[in-house]
Amino acid sequence: MSDTAETTAPEPRKTLRMSECGRCRSKNFIAGDLEPFATTPCTKCGHPVMLPLLMRQFELRSIIASGGMGTVFRAFDVKLERLVALKMVKREMLDDAEVMRSFYREARAGAALNHTNIIHIYSFDEFDGLPYLVMELADHGSFSGWIEREGHVPELNVLDVGIKIASALETALKHDLLHRDLKPSNILYNAGGEPKLSDFGLAEKATGQAGAEDSVFGTPEYVAPEKIQRAPETFLSDMYSLAATCYQGLTGRTPFVTETIEEMVMAHVNQPLTPPNHIVGISLMTNDAICKAMSKNPADRFKSYGEMILELEIARTHVLRALYEEQQEAPGT
Image (cartoon, rainbow, N blue to C red; front, side, top):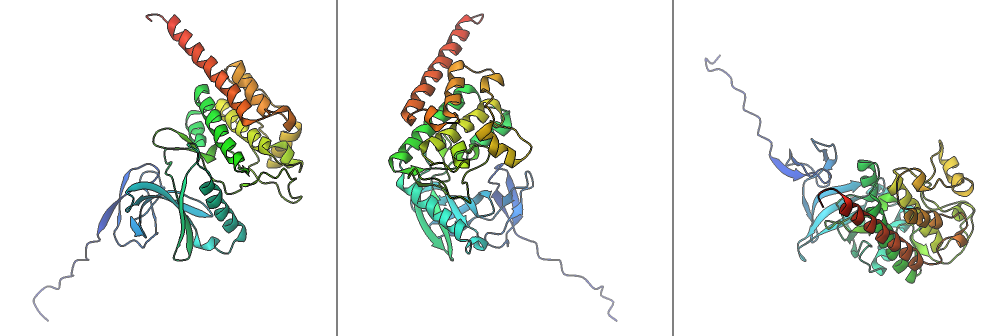
């Protein structure tokens, strides 16, 4: 036996690379040999973190959101030198016909619309058999996130959302499109604080036809009563959902609070709406505009988006004037 002591070779040091979390923006050191598109939890918030990778002309830098159907990446277009959002279908969803129809519908509807407050669609393509669309980046939170974070949103900001998203819906209507899924999580903010309407995955032509007997498209908390009753769906249904979204922004709660989804759906049809000014201190003009847009009977709502926008702008002017007078009366002014 040799007198020389046996030694164990040290394990090779793993290469670590720094990657930014798409949610909290904290820096993470993760294994440099992580597989493409594989993720590891952020050490701060648990959000999935990935290694940046180049896919066609897009450098995928981080994951903004990931759901059952697809993943949205924050990416950099190296040819046009701009930040974009890239939404890619998950491989396990390729055989789901409804998911694929929704994805193509979102791409085509968004590409047809050009409005400051609608997420712009730049391109649509496929990589390794996975369809993806490239769109305007709006990664500074959502209206729903604001409500969750603060409890409710200041009246002026809610009016801003109501005015701008109503204008966006008016543009969609000029292209004969209904959004059909207005809700706080589908209103995103860009770096400049501008609200952007997103997710046209349920968009359809504004035919005014009654819905199919076996389905009601939309989100229960914001769905218009005529859709539940299988009556003809028009732009007034989107108007109702926008008003319900603003209602939640003002009060911090959905228009109807029930124990079950079934009860909530039927509340839109049968339960009187509690005016938002019975819950939180807001101007009467804002209160009345929201209640009118949420009338059970579509014929009792605003006759057009232009009429709704005008009423919300008048309410906004009233709120601004009241704030100005309050500041003038404050001591030391």
